[in-house]
Image 1 (cartoon, rainbow, N blue to C red):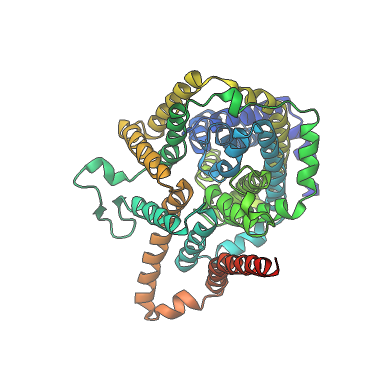
Image 2 (tube, rainbow, N blue to C red; image 1 turned 90 degrees about the vertical axis):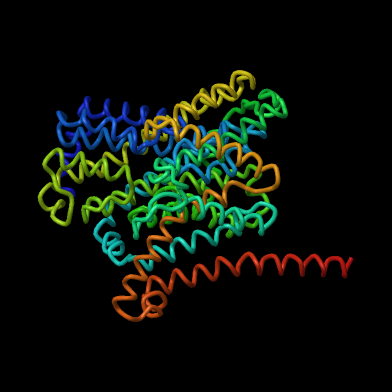
Length: 506
């Protein structure tokens, strides 16, 4: 890489490139903060404009937009309990409770710092570990995808606040919803009830808006919550410095979350939402204060944001090494490269080394830029929550409608968002947490596709047991599933035993 250092410096000190990088990061943050307007959509809209740009300028701009878009999703997740992007799902678990406690600024700053650190770690992994990590990605087949989904579903034990039975029922509802549409393997229509528009299935972001936003808006109106009493931002001097050192003093939390994000990003199709949920689950399991999660614990925000921003770097590893995008936004960057006459794959580093290393270094710089903008802008963004309910509630509803419609330009999505939102409100009233439902919705297609393809492979080989239970990576994932299930049970047993001992001794 050192031999290309002059070209890298020349490209990164170009005023046009720097300006477009900053513009891309800012635009990404704004788009990501608006529910329904995802980073993928922003990249797709910008793609035609990059055709006339130089290759390095194009990649730098798109990279900045990608990074800003993933970070921006945490803003609405923290302020109004609506993940601006799917990768910010886990951020709502503790980010919004912090807002309700009047700690929105702290949550936003923690998200910015952890996002910046996670993004830089992901960028360094992209820069130095691309060949090694891409080789690992090649070993994942349908059985491994199935067991990854099973591992994710075991997190229902962690995400179920209150009744485990209701958590499992919610996960089953999510799995059922995920089957609406055309089967990914057989091609038959399912649960459409003769209504052809449902053959396209349910858009994930529409359901996310419905389950995380609509119940909060209705509850806000119903209980006549006043923002200044419940969500006031307390001005504290030196809060950014305090939170920065708070996060730095917990390197295991940040590094573990970033590693989970990188590995998840390398696996094509997993995405930042799965990475954030896995990291949040790990943060809960390894914490001494498990009961504090879900009530406004900053560690939950840090774990989610460090992971989903590290996933951005991970998703580009298989793209640059194998020509396989690890996430939908990475597929847009693949299109940008092909528009420039560049074909990602094993020969990319040999044929376009200067361009690749310029992009990789610019990716790290863009994460630092995002961190700066996040810290500078959080205090201003936090003022949004001071709006009275009669301004805030209609504004949120307007954004949910616009965001739901903009995804596919389909009024049906708006109707589904409202319908599922009302259903989510009723379910929340009777004690169902939306997190297990959304988890089932996300992992359902991954599990179904992995299982169906694995069964076809087993039918061809004639040995189902060997395919599912003897492959090395599958064995590791099965062991993690068992630990994930047994862990909470043992914890509950030991906790109950300690309480009994205390009562006897008392």
